[in-house]
Amino acid sequence: MNPSFSSYLVNDVFGDPGVYVEVRWSKRALLFDLGHNDRLGPRKLLHANDIFISHTHVDHFIGFDAVLRVALGRGKTVRLLGPPGLINNVQGKLQGYTWNLVDGYPLTLDVQEFHPQEVRRALFRATDGFRQVEQPARPLLPEPATGKFTVLNDPMFTVSAVSLNHRVPSFAYSLEEQFHINVNKQKLHEANLPVGSWLKDVKEYIWQGQPDEFRFTATLYDKHHREERELVLGEIKERFCTISRGQKISYVVDARYDEENEAKIVALVQGSDLFYCESPYLEVDAGKARDRYHLTAKQAGLMARKAQVRDLVVFHFSPRYTGQGEALEREAMEAFQRI
Ligand SMILES: [Zn+2]
Ligand SMILES: [Zn+2]
Image (cartoon, rainbow, N blue to C red):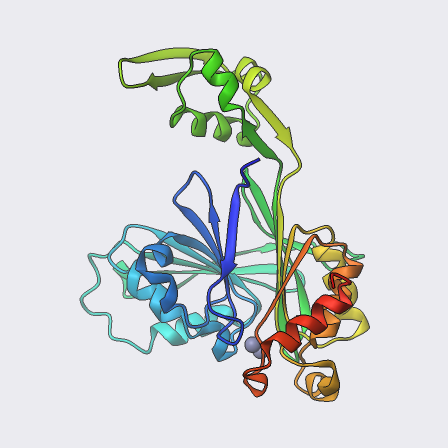
């Protein structure tokens, strides 16, 4: 099976936190947090149209400028989603520069902040000198039992969040593919159908929920010839596609270990294939972790176990442990019972 998402840390485990998620078969990517991100390079930064911010402490937001820089002059919308205060923070960043020569640039920043009961939204357009234009708020209804709410709904996936206590709200996120579509290339070959971009369209139609009787025109071509053929979605689905459980990737940073945070985290990340969790401190320094509203490696491992995730990646290590990265990793994996 070819997974739809491929994800990795933006920096090494001691660097600024952030996870980049590539969506296969598209030029699309999701980015969790905006710490230093030069390592991604301009092409990858440009593909990240949906950016999820945990909170705006400097190590999670200093990379905003890099995104702005590469996106300027591109005809696109970058969506930034995060906790209360994000609109002001973005405005503050934008006001730090002079914008008298960008009115030909079609870039729009769409910023949405999630309050306990509503989503506030503002647009900043380059054509308008990045003046803040408020949009109507919409209601938000978190799940009462878990505090979980939806941040982004796409035909292919959903991104949900919970708000954690880090002395300021810090959002944890979970990305869930609705379901996974696998195309059997061998069967296509046997039926004399070439692999090609028409399969991307097929997936798109299935994600959109088009009915089985839906007809579409596929452009089929190989080395020797090219033809347009009308196909029926249901037939293609039945003969060549396998639909299975989707991938789930979770991202948790900067949060204190307490009962409420733990319950929210475990509910959000339950059953993830991959769980990225901060673990800045060793358990011997649990007091310091608590004072600074952070987790220890052991706590990260315990929550991964409780949430029955498949794989755990720990990161956002405190520089005090430089040279001891392995100890943090080992402590988390022991609590996760993987070693
Ligand atoms: Zn923080
Ligand atoms: Zn941090």
